[in-house]
Image 1 (cartoon, rainbow, N blue to C red):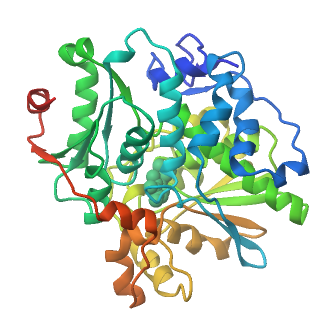
Image 2: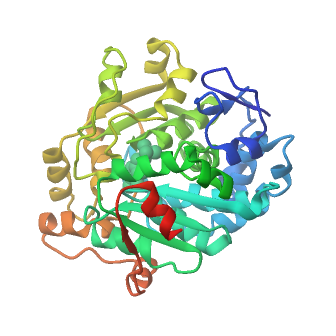
Length: 419
Ligand SMILES: *Cc1c(COP(=O)(O)O)cnc(C)c1O
C-alpha cells in the first residue's frame, strides 16, 4: 500500500512516511493509492475493539515497517471502553469519549504517539511535536505523548478563550509537554505553528511534527471504530447502518467514508455541522467556498474552511456520487440548546447535539457518533438541564493536578526565546 497526494504532484510514499510528513510535498493530503477490499466476517463482531482495529488497519500498513507494530500499537492505544448502545428502535449511540481526555481525539492521538515511536528517522532526536489548539486536540495529543513517548510537545492555545476544563487538559502533564498561552486568537496560534515550520532556525534545530487532524495516523483508528460499530450492527440486525458524525474539520466523517469504501456495511455518512456551513452549502449544490469561522457552542467544530474536505472531494469528484454516500446538515446554537434542554435522561455535549438534532430528518437506521464527554462542557450544559453533569474518574484525576503554562506574545521570536 502506498499513499498519494490528493493533488497528484507528490511521489507516493509508504504509511510511515505519510505519518512522519503529515502533509504531502505538493500541499495536498495523503490518500491511499488503492482501496483494499476487506472480506468482512460476522465473527469479527465478537472481537474486542483493539483486535478488530488491527485487522481493519493492517491493509494500510502493508509493505511498511509499521505493519509489524500495528498490532501492539492497537493493543496499547485502545485500552478504554467503546460502548455502542441503543437510543430508540432505529438509533444507536457510539460513545467515543471514554479515553483519558474525554473525546474521540484520544483514539488518533494515542495511535499517532505510538506510531511515531516506531518510525525510524535519522533526526529522531530532534523531533518536536507542535499543536495549535482551541478544543480537544491539544489535550489528547499532550496526554498521548506524555504517556507513551519522550518526544517533546509544544502546545499553543489562545489565552482566556478556552474553557477552564479544556485549559486543565492542556497544562497538567509536566514531563516533556509544555503549554503556552498565546496572547491572541486560535488563528494566531495556528499561524505560529505554520511559521515555525517554515522558519530556518526552527527547521534546522528541530524535526517538527504536526499533530493536526490531517495526519493519516489519526484517520486510520477513526476508520476502525466506524467499521467496528457497523459490524456490530450488521451481526445483530443484518443490514447496513448510517453514521451521523458531528463535523468540523471533517476528519472523522472522512474516516467513516474510508470504512464504507473498503467494504464495511455502512449505508451512508451524514455530516452534522454547527453554524459553519461550508460543507452543507456544497451538498446543496453550491460551489465550494471556504467561509470565515463562526464561533458556536460546539467550539471543536468551529471551522470555516475544513481541510479534510479535500479528501472527500478527491474520493467523490462528482456531487451526485457524493450524495449517494453522504449527506449534510447545519445546526444553529438555538437548536443545539434546545436539543440539550430536551434531552431528558440523556446528557448531550454541544457537538453530539448537532447529530441528535439531525436524526429525526433522516430515514432508516443510524448510529450517532458521540464525540465528547458532556462533563467537558458543563458551563454550557448545566444551566440548560438544571442539574450537575457527573465527572468521570479520568477527567476528575486531571482536574486535581496542577496547571503549568507560560504566557507568550503571538510572535515567533517570543516562542524561540522560551523553547
Ligand atoms: C474535533 C471534534 C469534532 C470535529 O471533528 P472533525 O474531525 O474535525 O470533523 C467534533 N466534536 C468534538 C467533540 C471534537 O473534539
